[in-house]
Structures are given as structure tokens and as C-alpha cells.
Length: 205
Image (tube, rainbow, N blue to C red; front, side, top):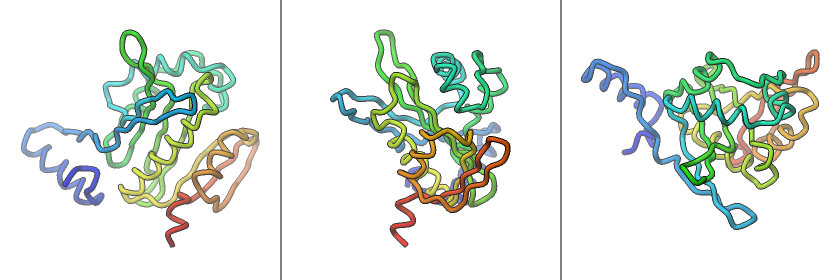
């Protein structure tokens, strides 16, 4: 049985066993989440789980975003993301915090073009966030990344999701309508908190 097929409690037991056996915490890499996505222009990008060692590439990714896209994601233009933020984003553990990235091949390796994040708020609820690099938007990448991120989160026991965004962020709201069913929306001082369920889950009930 792969780590991605384990129930959340089994996953934690495996990690505890590895920590006792080797004396350090070993974070399993969920390789089952790796995939390739074909784009409308017949190109392709690679989807894979984020690693803790990806601090540098995530920093480069955020610096390539336009000020508008950065503002929509963080409610701040933030031209140079602080180290603490990058460490938080990459503090994945394949249990309570998970992230997927989309990569495009370039001459000397790969370049991150999109990021989907999921972090536990309690045992059944997780906060999610998604951002796609400007020139890669409107190609279905955000939808594909969101669907896979939510699916991976459900395997880990999360069935309710929350996204916080600027109230006028129409793009993310449309994305949530495509991949989920909104349960509630609370708006205060220009910020909206949207609670939703993954759309496939709702259809299967």
C-alpha cells in the first residue's frame, strides 16, 4: 500500500514508526500525485507535490508574478516574499499540510508556473489557496491543480474547505464554483471567507 492510499491515522503511525527507527522525522514523498497535464495548445506541464527543499523555486515563482496577481493572492503586492512566508509554504508534511506545483520545462531544468496549497484547520477542515503565473492563466491549469489538491486533501481526511480572498477576486471565485459547491460566504472589510465542498464529493452523495 502506498503512502497516498493510507488512511490519515495509518499515515501518522507510519511516520511515527520511521521517526522512532531512524531518530529523525522522515516526510514521505507522495509520488502518486505526480502527473502530466496536456494544455489546449498541445503543450504539457508536469504536476508534482511540493518538497520542503523547494524554498528557492517558490521564491522565484512569486517574484515572477505580476503585482496584481501577488496582490490578489496576498492582499499585498509583496514584490519579494519574506523568508518566513516561503518556509511556511514549503513546510509540507503529507498529512496536515500539502501543496502541489505545476512545472514547465525550460532549457536548464523546470520552472514553477502554478501552486496549490492545502493546510489543516482541524481534522476535517482545510484552508486552500491557488495561484497561477500570469502568462499561464486561462489554460485550465488552475482548475486541474485545484481538483488534484482537493482530491489529495480528501484522501487525508479533509472534506470541508475554506478559501480567503479579496472580495473582488472574481477569478478565484469562478475557480471555486467550478471545483466545489459553496456552502457559505462571509465578507468583512473587503475580504471574503468562502466555505465549500469538493464538487465530486457532493455529486457522489
